[in-house]
Length: 300
Image 1 (cartoon, rainbow, N blue to C red):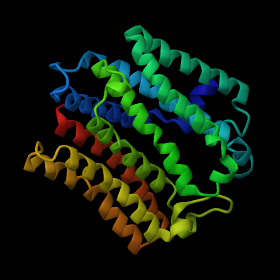
Image 2 (image 1 turned 60 degrees about the horizontal axis):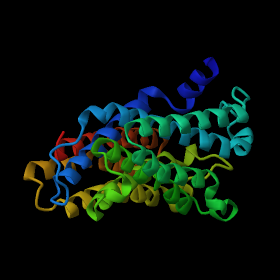
Image 3 (image 1 turned 135 degrees about the vertical axis):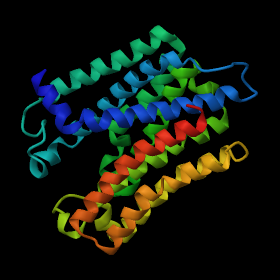
Image 4 (image 1 turned 180 degrees about the horizontal axis):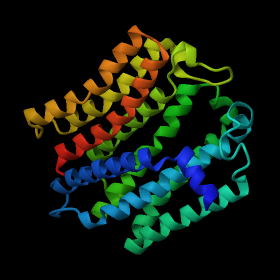
């Protein structure tokens, strides 16, 4: 347990991951409000008492993804990041795989106790996560293409968000409307933003044998790539909910972009380590506040 607490502290820090997953859960549960308000369903309100279950399942899901990544990157980490828990031998790979199995059982059992059909639905998200772990069975061809590799992996956020909506509404994936699936795609944008920003560095921060978007696209290009994904969720929300957003709600959603656009501009003008760290840090804060703003706009 001590070893796993060290692992969590270093690779899945509760201080950052818990607020992020909580805001993710709340925002996507609010999408359930949109689904249940649609005329195709004869329901009044989602089961908000299920929010804690949705949150716990989401934590288990994302923790499992983190462990997957640690196992996948083990050979590289031994050389490039030897201080990481698996690379330095704090946790062995067989033990990590047993924890993955335990998390899978927990996720399915928790959902099955709620409704077996929801566990069946979640198997789609779980199955995608295992295909990700196997790098879509084309890892040697995929790994050299950092951006393609990333967007294929971050798509799992859409399916995980779908599980949150399923828990709150009681509907499996195949009960979602096309507009709901389009709304869920906003998670892809947010997770792409996180992925692109966390691997965007100032020239002095770049390391040999460590890939980054700033190496591929330069600092301005990598920052522009990140900002495009910050805008994508707003475009989706406005497209799907065009007639139902008030002026104030539009201002709240659009105004949150200031949190990333200003540090992005500073980083482009001054591509130094302190500006890069500020940019990456505020992107993480933006994800939490962006999700909370979305939840407030859609009903919570």
